[in-house]
Image 1 (cartoon, one colour):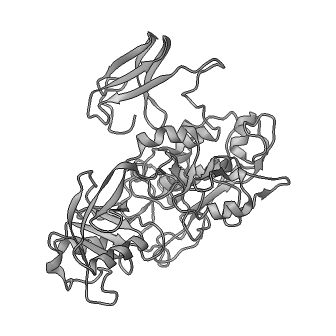
Image 2: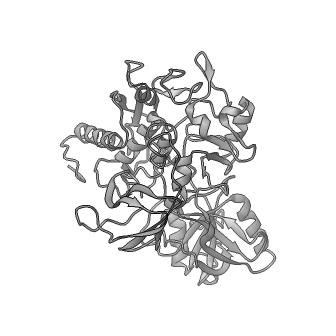
Image 3: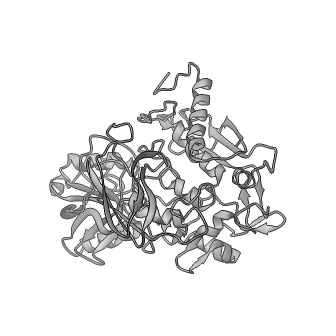
Length: 496
């Protein structure tokens, strides 16, 4: 037994994880038709440093039933069954497989599966998190359109997926179900410009996601986009400002920061260390720089695209960010001409993982990554999201903004709509202060008198407390919340 999982054999521990993850999705989604998942542990692609942890998708798709919300689009079978109210295909709905070789000599040998329910996995891989992620794909978080070629799934007929209705290309201004195959293939590698155009996700993104990381510099454009590492000190709006120094470890690629002591260790005291990706882990590079006296670390990608440094080391107490290869080259060129001061910080205006349009970014690296591109959130989101392409150590049972995407594609009702076909009341709603510690006040404004209920929910959709119920006149209102749930217990920190 481990982490709340009472299993006494590997098989029972695994099965308990499966039922635990299924119960979390089952508490969020509702269907009169049972959702059946065909799952197994099988050997999947693996190396000593990388591994495919799992994969999942629909076993069948359905289109053009009169009961479906969106006609002319393929539905994952489980979602189609829910909307139709009958089982349109008696076979299993979702197929899923997970890597049976994890932890073996040629498959992330220092890792392995963690079977607890408490997400205290340490250096192991949390099976519950991986199950939640893969079940999400099978339930509808993916497209059946080819991202590499842009071709629709051949039925017949050849139709877009429901997913394609909400994929939006910020450059062309078109959704995927409005494009040619060639346009979709180009959109799939339009990094930072492929977004999700769903109302429910857009409404919650600015609340749930944090400010973006950035690197302020005294040269060139003034700021570079960045991603905070999964370890190190949290970034702040004020930031850490110091001169930038390119690391020299004196061995091989001298700028990768893997060998110690650094040749220029004395020059790093009180500075921001600029280090190239490669050879050793991100955490090892950062720890070497910290030991040399650096007050922050800037990691430069060794391939095109953004860099979100993963890993873990609780002893790293300085901020660490990743920047693109192109921005790193610009910074190195500037250093060759004279001193450069940098600031590792949070952006005062940009939200992590959100395009300037307000839409959340989808994963669209160039070149295209089969199995990852298009059907995941972008890695720039902060905090890390369940449906990013790689596992992250800070995940939990929280379905985050993924739950709201399921509202967009039809799994859940959109709760801000009026319950009938009449006009929707105009409501302006905010928390004061927001964020808050302990008690706060919920402020709302009505354009007309309304009978309403004001309730707080957490991001999983669980009602935490009903604050007010009754008829309210037009105008402004403030309702206090003492920070406690309906049973009088102090509510935990989080998003409400």
